[in-house]
Length: 583
Image (cartoon, rainbow, N blue to C red; front, side, top):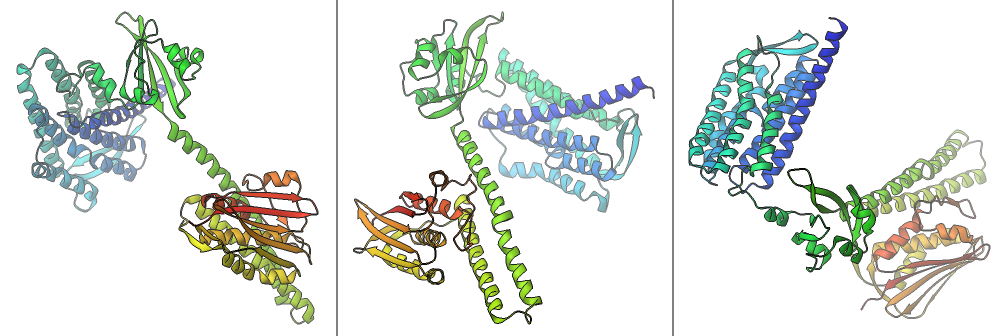
């Protein structure tokens, strides 16, 4: 083979792949279009036919472009998976549906029609055990292509005869109705018949010559032409409509907002969705620039934009596309403004950015803040194990205390991490109820008693009265645990911590005040923000990630409160948050 022939085969290979991909895409688009109009005679079943064609095309792409026999046979099996065997019965059902102006085969009738196709589908997937569909298969090379040579079995012919019977039966039903139709419906039906019969004629040629003159199955390629004709019929003749739809009906049924203007820029039509968006019915006849100006749109850039731009109307975000309406001579006679609501998409994008930032922080905590303490625990426990008898009692106690502190610190990081991840994924339970905040504060203080004693801190509570709050108990426990632990961590040994509760209007105000190291204004501004790395070390080497404060803020806001912080270097900090009082 010379260079020219080799280049030709490569181009042919690419052309076939392109046609198969186009055929697949057109089948999907046509199916979706028809299934949306499934109440129109013929649309449901021809939409299902399009799905079978899609499976056929996908399977053939795999068969044609893989190299091993097993992979190629997988492609054949996919062609039969709700594909080839079912195409003819959906076509036949569509013909009945169209001929009867909407009457559908009963479920019982359809199940009976589907028996042979389902058997065929099962047999092709179990062919290696019985060889009823294909007796044998082998690979052969045709120019630069590697294809399958198939020796067909008895059931292959059963499927062929069955498929062709219903294909031609459906065709006869439609052909018999053509003389009775008006001219516009004749054009619909004739174009429809040509579109559907074309790939089947190609398939007949392939079946006859599959092991001789026709090595490549041109049926999927023929479906490319078929899908184009279907699209043309839909566009030009209103194929599958009982009565070709008027343009106003199309406009009214659209889910997007639509404005149509004439050559002078006056609004001549607007669909109900657009009326709902604008909240104004007095738009028809007005200049589009005035309408856009009234709603705060940059009309200069909007009117001159052809393509897609983002605009905001009444706090909703839309993808606006502007296109010309032309007459038969190609002259512009107006414009169409199509508003596609992308508010949910933009909100999802913003949420995705937040989650991505959270993911990065999560990985950072796992990789650094959670891993490093374990290295310390492992290291000190190995020293204890190896040098246990050489160490005196005081050294042993020191190592044990250090291991214990590291374990507690790591456990708190892990606990915050788990609670935060549950909060971010929405799996955390939220069950607010009335409870006494004072008793929960005392319980939280008791849980950190050992830490307080270790640093010889003085902890005071200043609570006047009984305060019943309405919040989630577990979340408030997490808030108090983190804020009190934070105060202990950054307090110097012998320091002071004060917890007080007061009420203001309908809220309880809880404060955690320490006389510790405090923080700078720059650090304070970065608190509660996950995107900033807030790794910190307490006055006795306690590790912190900043995740606990982020969790506090999210839990407080979820319970209807707010959190604030005041701090000054070397003078301490005051964290204050509110919770709604129970009514």
